[in-house]
Length: 136
Image 1 (cartoon, rainbow, N blue to C red):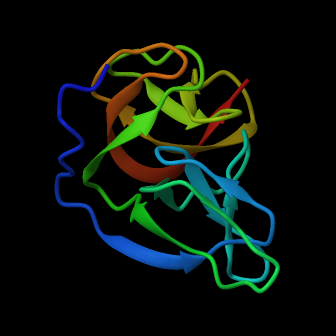
Image 2 (cartoon, helix red, strand yellow; image 1 turned 180 degrees about the horizontal axis):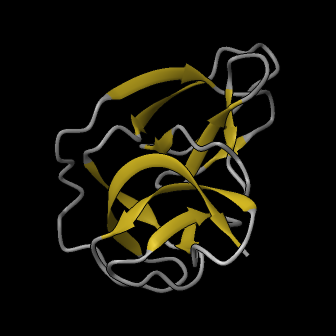
């Protein structure tokens, strides 16, 4: 569970339009869709950052969300399964989870490294940094 009090460290924030009918949840990863709108990240999304608030996209395309960009700072992220301090994280079904790297040629898109441990639903501090790596 995060002990940081959601105090971001050296993070850049940017506002984005939310894809129609997308349900964005605070602490969950987002990616840019083809229309330059953000949508909820899944396991192999190229995550650009973490939503700072919960927002549902509307058909008018006017819903907006502020995103903590994966540019090297730290931010409070939601766990979607087990998160272990020191492990690298990938987008899960409704947050982030551990991702074992190496031993394969499948590209995995990661959001950063956990600074705390937690379980599904916990908020943990993460050192943000978007990158890709090979895994089995």
